[in-house]
Length: 75
Image 1 (cartoon, rainbow, N blue to C red):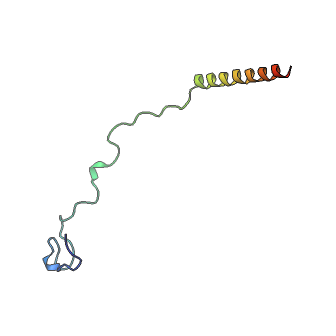
Image 2 (tube, rainbow, N blue to C red):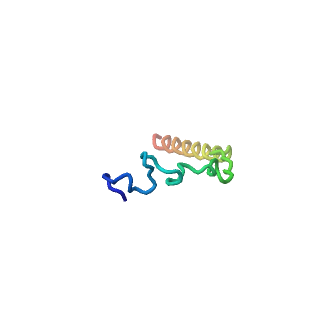
Image 3 (cartoon, one colour):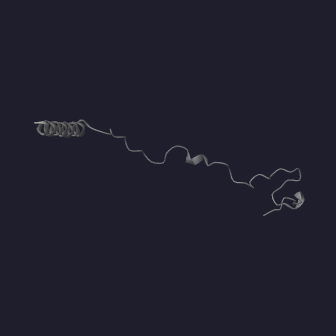
């Protein structure tokens, strides 16, 4: 680790003009990692028609049952 008051002539990899010599730092990004490395699976639909129909049927049966209970309590 260098101190903030390092002498530029003694810092390794530093040009006398103050720049850094080529090869002293790694490249910013690798150019071989662009894109995805494997095929992504196809996205599936969230709900098919059969599960939605079953849910609607259960909701309708619960609603009919609640209405029947309410009518039975009123009589």
